[in-house]
Image 1: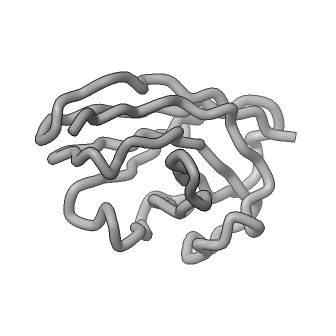
Image 2: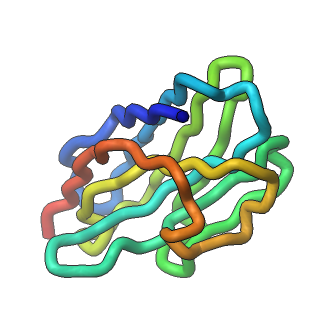
Length: 125
């Protein structure tokens, strides 16, 4: 089992930046992909970004490409999401996710085995 805990959410004005972090604990000795999903009120949970075990491959949802950057530190078992040029439509609960293996191309929520509790990001209009 892998436990995930997010931090860094909050309220930020449109055009601003925010950094989310996620710490993994438990059985983190194997290779695993980490990423982020988000869910806005009344909407489906949406893929945001994923990063391979090595950090050499990243994948982003269309809505955040060019604005968000995912990174990881395997020594600390953490994954970060740097968000810039935030928009009101980025308002959502952001969930850290993980799955065993090396493939970071999956955007389907069903492919991710482990989920954090979520952290709220609010960008007022």
